[in-house]
Length: 233
Ligand SMILES: *Cc1c(COP(=O)(O)O)cnc(C)c1O
Image (cartoon, rainbow, N blue to C red):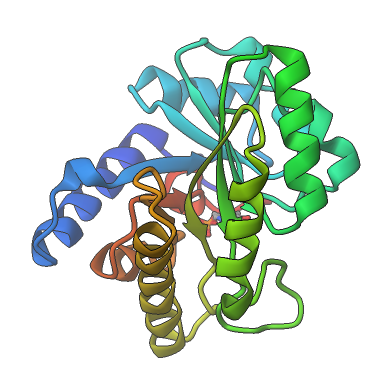
């Protein structure tokens, strides 16, 4: 297999993101690229970081810890995988964001862990939503989101900032994916206004196969791995 040229992949991707943003009348600076570095080596991540990429995504603690402590403090790390609440204590000090909160116990444990780790740093939390209703996906059902958000907001958990919603598209189905992304945007906007949460302004959606669609539908955080690093082995 040919060694992928990461610098070329990244700059090509950046151009495409810019083109998608312009085509949908959006400002490219409102869209943040998260380089999904799960399963990649420290060396691969270093290469991308040296090109100026700031935000990275990982989906297991174990894999992430082979990289995060060995890279610059200026990077932003996003936890994008399923997290068991008993592992919540492993995030503080490493991750600034989590995209996959979908239960109360996890939210509470994250808050406790953040508070005992630093007392003042905040963890930016997104609620994962299973918009398409596929059985193998985690996340709340769309009709559970407002109640859940109201509940956690009322708890006033220390060190937790509720920032928005995350979803995963439907593999190979553009129409269903677009519909899921547009539903997520509507839900996020309703949450922000109805619950009066000005900081609840983020929409994490779009991966290598569907980030352009996601941008058209309002994504503010896109999570892209394969287009940067090549196929995962
Ligand atoms: C792996 C992963 C991605 C990146 O997927 P690619 O197809 O490699 O771009 C994005 N989001 C989540 C939640 C993932 O697990």
